[in-house]
Amino acid sequence: MKNDSTTINDKKLKPEDFLVLHFSPSKESQTVSGDSIRTKVSELYFFQVVDTSEITYRPLRLRDSKGEEVGVIEPGEGVDYNQLFDHNGKDILRNTNDPWRVYHYSIGVKQSGIRVYPRIPDANYGGGFSWLSGSEPDPRRGDDVGYVMSGETDYNNPSTKLESFINKQDDLTQTQFGFHVEEGEVPKRPIVSIVGHGYELRPVHNKSQMLELLADISKDDPQHRVRLVDYTNNSLRTHNISVPDEWLSAENTLTISDSNTSSGILEAANPEGETEGVVGE
Image (cartoon, rainbow, N blue to C red; front, side, top):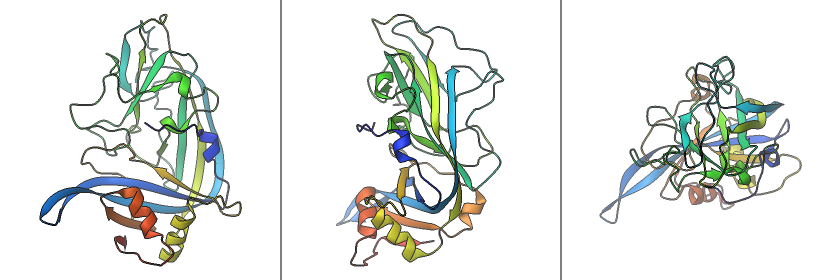
């Protein structure tokens, strides 16, 4: 998991700012010096922010898909992964209406001593917070990997350690959360917050501008801020991604193949203009 103290509000964008969404949809095998190695194929989608809105949902008690509240969790016990539902059993973060609108959010937990486990399950598209099949942490038994402590993500302004984003999709949201109360604590019923931003977007089509935006990602430009959001930052398995059809036809994408995705992004935007490994779709 991420180890910085950046909050979701630190990443807020304004109209006319730029958003680059980074997907790692699969891992491929390539032959290098006679050896077969696994390399990432990254897809970058480029947008400019047209309008913004605030997302704040708190207090939120854990519920199942029927809207029934999850009971008190005893110390040393946990609840399995699930989406975040309201009292009517509706998936709170589901976005089914606008292909050019995304939600960028994180979650916080009010009480201390609670482990939060994020994941995207095998059966779904995506890959952020994903694990090799059969080896993912189990929040019910409190596995010692793959979680963020509730004290590390503020209830009112959550850390980006649990950030994710949602684009238009017809099914339930992809990211799920599990919770575990640590040994030595009192029984607890987690109270959760969802905080973030909604962005109305328009695609950036020009390849030269895309590369300029990549070069600007690390700069603090007060005129045109650029944010890179990793959708598949912890992916360890082969999988697919699902984006709106409108994105696929917008031609606002660069594809990078590199054994180190982060380095590949930087190399693609180098000032010498060398763009090997970068393919415009």
